[in-house]
Image (cartoon, rainbow, N blue to C red):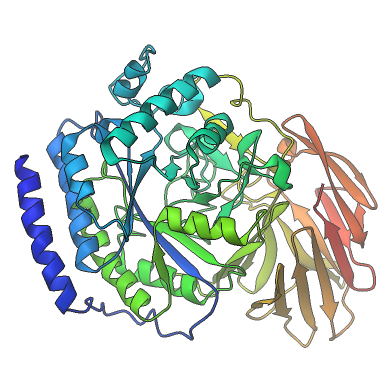
Length: 561
């Protein structure tokens, strides 16, 4: 038996005895002192496993195995279940097989990690084009780099070998991204239940996912796995959960004017976020307390390519914190397949959800809420008592991905939706784009200023935002549902207020025509429209892109296509 595995078996036996007699250690965090809620706050601990790491010769098979073994030990110490996803090279390594077969099936799940290494390609009878036995470029190491027929061959080989080893087909298959043809084939032939993809990012690791359903999960279009479907008949009935626990405030703006973004997430390897005890406490407090509508979701854990010595500190802090929150009834810790099955039982189409952060990290002065539905997403950002829409993207199930029928021919993979406000791509570090809440006063254009917002879910599918303005100027009330957003100024003094889009990069905009009642735009070869059901758009003059003026102190925008 592999020497690492012998030690693992002995140690796990001891840990199991200890865990049955002791409660989980409680960290010095005040994070969990909240009211209980009936809204599920779901945590998936997902660790995915590679057996090959060509980027650093010091990361051997033994080092990779040590990382996974240590994750298993810590999770079992705190009686935390979770999901381990195997890349094919790890699937066929008997050391991982023996380790994972020893896990309790009632709390652990074994699934597939869908990056494509050399052993899988060659067993499927295809030619390996990679630089290394595992090549992370998306035209080689991901399903997008293969024809639809080749993708099916790769799936069949993996699934049959998985079943020979574990006795069943995996219920969960995840990757940084999986094309729609592959995902639908896995569903129709092998009945997978759940998938997951990378958080939104721009340029990181050679691929971009930008403008999608920001967190929680969505049913993808049959034509485009990154695009939420609007109708059940056009969706793949496999929910895709967004991975990594992205920072709701700070991740979006990181990397402005660079080719790629950095990472601010719950991944334990990052010392300023998931590896930082204060940051993790901040994230989980907002996760538990913030308005999430139907449910809250975060994926935690770490790929074993980030080795144990770098992951250890963050992982060993996070796991007992999750155990404490679970024991207090604040969160549910589930496998990815369990959460996927729950999602499918409760939602026939993609639901409306939100991510709310009521307090900034450390001494920051920002607050935010993300709203997502099957039709669009918006992000509201409060900063220094002002408010702007930082992001609005629309979804269209009819937009076919260029990778659906054709293989990717470059080392850059791109996934987008339809922009109406893009506070990242239309910004510079000196000038941030946004649809701002402004007023005209004494001949000057100034920002509306207010107090802390109150964000609630008064009824299913509706998010309500109340923003009390300063100087007794009334309250901005926003009612946001899966199709429309209404903004009303209630009470207070009479204000000459409006919304104004300001950008730093006016040549990058999609707007084709601006009329009083609608704006028509073009992106990815597809026209889309945002219309006013109340209020009106103004045509651009001087440096402004457009304004939206209220009617009877109210603006109502329709985002449904």
